[in-house]
Length: 250
Image (cartoon, rainbow, N blue to C red; front, side, top):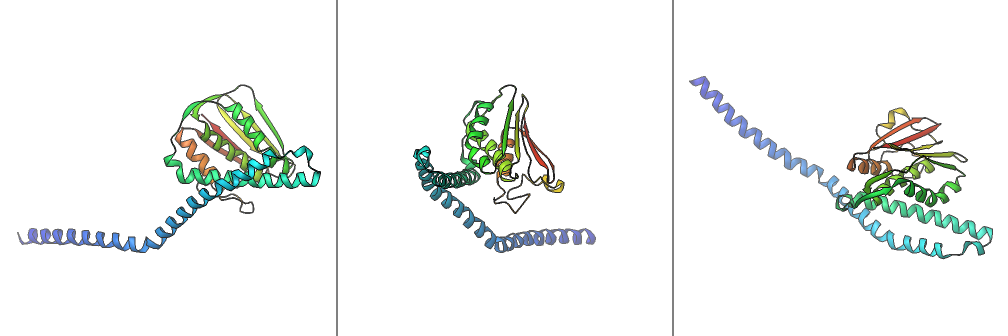
């Protein structure tokens, strides 16, 4: 009876002590993490405020550039306008990425049957200024069109990030090969390649294969988020300093 009473007393006091330690640990952890939490909240507010402020001037720049009759400009001025256009589009793409990251949980999908061939041709044309500036040869092979039931803006954002990376990490006079088949979309570039040990981490936010090229490391993170939402499978194969191939299959 005495031993049973001792065990009972130990159990009661041990449980109470454990609960008190858990409560103390919880508040201690909150106290220690408070500076980090405040920093993250500050960064989040900064991103939201920045993206809000970026939209109006970038749209104004791009709209005015589109209204310029480039055929009437001399060669030097036309090159300057082209550089401004590339810069404005780069900022616009960054704005859209940041907006998607901060507001993706609030964006309601408007799914419809979307022609991938049509979107790819449209985005190849949009990114032609970027590819031409690096003298890249872009080829698009499509044996048959593919309709996906998906949100048009989201699949466009996915394709944009694949194209953007293929251009950004490519070499001068390189190539980009785009292939659309019944079961997959494939984008292959002749660029820097990715080390094998880094491929698995490429879909993590802020992960970058090469820090010598500008970027935040959020493009493939967004690709992964959209792919997960629509049960698409994204795979990366690469040969370092030779090529990188990204395949999106369904």
